[in-house]
Structures are given as structure tokens and as C-alpha cells.
Length: 419
Image (cartoon, rainbow, N blue to C red):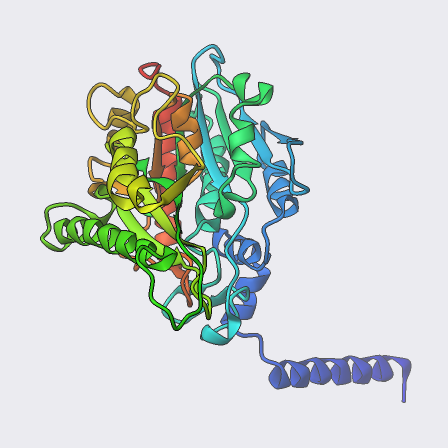
């Protein structure tokens, strides 16, 4: 066989081998999508990080021109990440886009897909823990900034900061609470904060941990005593239950939202096989910002745990219900707040019904500083699955959200109206 024919024969064999391998292992459309670097594939990569670390975010941020990166050293091993896009007039109050790094634990056996696989279904749903709360928002911020800086006409007047903080899901007392009191935060000159939430929230409820304690004569479980510890405690639980029922009736009658009433839920009790000398019950209490805390404390002292029944109580107030000027922790949503008008304009004049968040987020720490703060997330037509099994976000909803943040970033950073 000539050298030329031998070369031709070898080339033919190689081609046939490659063709047969391609037939045995076909490359699907999803394989091509995984190979591409798109907003969706980046979202999937971020979702696959069980506990969100800053490495992925810093790597992506480094690809965005003019975005500076800073790791903060506060109290936990996980370092908060602060990104900054400098405006042309740094003397103007800046914009802070905040989100958190952590996600709640999952129960994989109760999911239809592994909770950190970021499975992308044929109908566009991306399943993962944190898909809604709140890895979507944290990455949408960066995708929106990336798209904005590509546009040569984008000239932000105000500086834009993006913060990623750990431990929001467990209260944020070691991170966001310390961050807002730090010299670094003070130097940011923050005028307005967008925090993470499912719809539009202008306030959070304040959590109290209430423990009611009752005293009485100890004795054998077979004997009966007047004013035993458990008897006194049961009376108090009944009074608290009546208050809870009255509050819940307002919700069921449509007179108030769940977040607009004081919720009181028992969380534990003390039971023994004998009659104890002391017994206690714990309650998770949530106060809307309009609640008078002193009035509620008087009710607790007079009705829920009266000293006349040998009772005491203790309240753990994790966060204040008023800001540093003594005002309720609420962000105005009217013409008195220029940032609100900018948000309405950027959202095309259409926003969901304004709400008080039933639970608590890091937004309370900036509201306590007197900084207007709104919880916001552009997730239209999406069931609320925060902390739930099979949490997902549709790809189309995620992409539309990036466009919404592009408009918000342009509107908020290009205006001189906010203060």
C-alpha cells in the first residue's frame, strides 16, 4: 500500500471512529446549554453551591468592568462580600443592593430532584434550595450590572454597592447587625437599600421570645393542690390563647393581613410525671411596627402572667421595634419618599400590593439606622416556595427579573432626587 493510500485509509478509519462514538454518545441540547456560559447556566452553577461561598461571586464580579471587590472581616468565618460601582458624583447618597449568602437546610428525600442539582425541567423550572430565597436575587444584581456597564450611555451619578452577607437565615445578629454599625458601612454613605423579599415589603414584624413562668407547691402527681404551678400556667395559656384567637379572627374576617396583627404561638412547655414547683411555657410573638410595645407588656404583666398567681415572665427582644429616632421601623411608600417614586417608575408603574413581612429579614438593621429600605423581588406568577420542598424558579421569570433590575439600577443611580 502506498504512503498516500495508507494516510487516506487512516483518515477514513479515524472519521468512522469519531462518527460511531458520536452516535453512541449523542450530545443533547441540554449538554450544549451546560457548555454555554449564559445567565441561566451561571444561575445553575451558583445554585449547586450548597452553602453559598463568595468564590463564585468574586470570580464572576471580576469579569465585570469597573466593579471593585472587597471582603469584609466581621465575626464569622464566612466573610461578607462588598462590591462597588463608583458613580460620577460620589457625594450623593449611594444605593445598596443587599442579599444573603446562606440557604436553609433541605430534606433531600422530600424533593423530586436533588435540592442542589439545579435540575432544569423541560417546562423551564429550575429546582434548587435557594432558587427563590435568595440566590436568584443576588445573581440578578450582578447580571443586571454586567449588562448595564456594557452600555456606553450608562453613566451612573450615584455609587452602587452590592452586599452579600452570611447568616441571615439565623437572624443576622453577627453579620448584618454589625455591618451597619461598622466604619466601612458608615463610609458608604448609603441613601437607599433594596433588600431581598418575594414581593414588595416596607416593614418587618419584630420578634419577641416570651417565656411565662408559674410557681406553686410541689407534690405527687396523684394529689390535687390549689394554685399549683401547672394550674397557674394553664390559666395563663388560656388567656394567651384567647388573645391569639381574637387576633386570628381579624385575619380570617379579612380585616387585617397575617402580618398586620400580633401573632402569639406556643413553642414549648414543661411537663413532668409529678407536680413541679415551677412550670413555664414559651411563645413566639411577632409584633407589627404599629404595635405599642409598652401596652403589650402591660397586658402580659396584668393578664398573661399576673404576680397575683405567683407568675413571672421574661421577654427576649432580639431587635428594636423603633428606629434611632423612636419612629416605627417602616419605610414610607408615598411622595414623602423620593426613592419610592423612582422604584415605581422603574417597575413600569406596576407593583404588587404593599405588605408588612410576617417574619424578619436583614432589612430591619438598615431601617433602624433610618435608611429607607424596601424588600423587593421580581418573581411574577411564581408560587411562594421559600424554605419549602421542591423550591424552583422558572428560567423566563429569572431572565425577566434581570431586566427589571437593569431598569431599577439605571433609575436609582441616575437620579439626583433621593436624599
